[in-house]
Image (cartoon, rainbow, N blue to C red; front, side, top):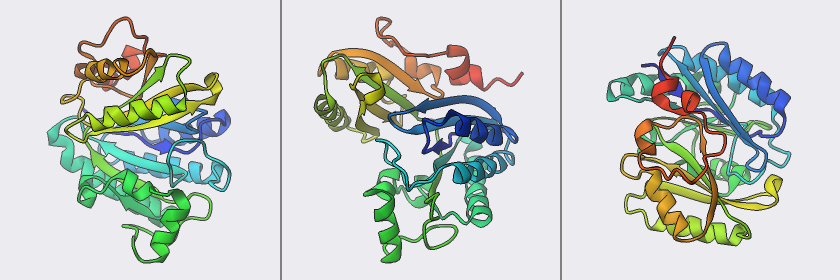
Length: 288
């Protein structure tokens, strides 16, 4: 089984730019999926490749992202600090953990050295430090914390790139990026309350939730969830909890999902745009 990388870029509206960035990723790795959203103003790419190839793919995509994305312009509702905002390397078996850690560290070194973009590690490579800790307050707050000596990049310059910010890199097991759109007339306030209650009801602390107003979808309200242990918390359980708090319109899965995470998923809830051949990990990661 190959390694997987899931680079997120802070662009979800310029399809030409996303095509260029995707083509750069695809020069060195197999591009499995691309999911973009104009309200999050974000795109998530899923790449697969053998150890030694993904670092080159992430460098190529980071270069194009830095060229195409200027963080001085508004970047939507999703928290971010960089053009290539996060670049985790994912291992689907314990045997690949070491290779994923090595690939993540090589990616961080290449991006920082070749593009002069500071890189911060998160997750196990940084003692458990989270993305949320690094993104707290956004790009300006991160710049101020670096200047004050509170934070030091793990790789690269001791200041943010003027247009591309910083990149966050990790090696981790798979997570599921899972969105729930609330049925109208739910508003952002309702979504914020649902997000809070889902998060607080999770004893593991492995559910990360935010609320987003989907302006492009008639101001629909969405709860965006990162499920960091989909075996401990299957998606069906999250749906059940959310439905007890507010009526649901549909669901959405960003990128890949292990088949086990879908066990018991309610058939009556549509997963918008879901393609099992492309998005179920066991199907997508079978090289032909």
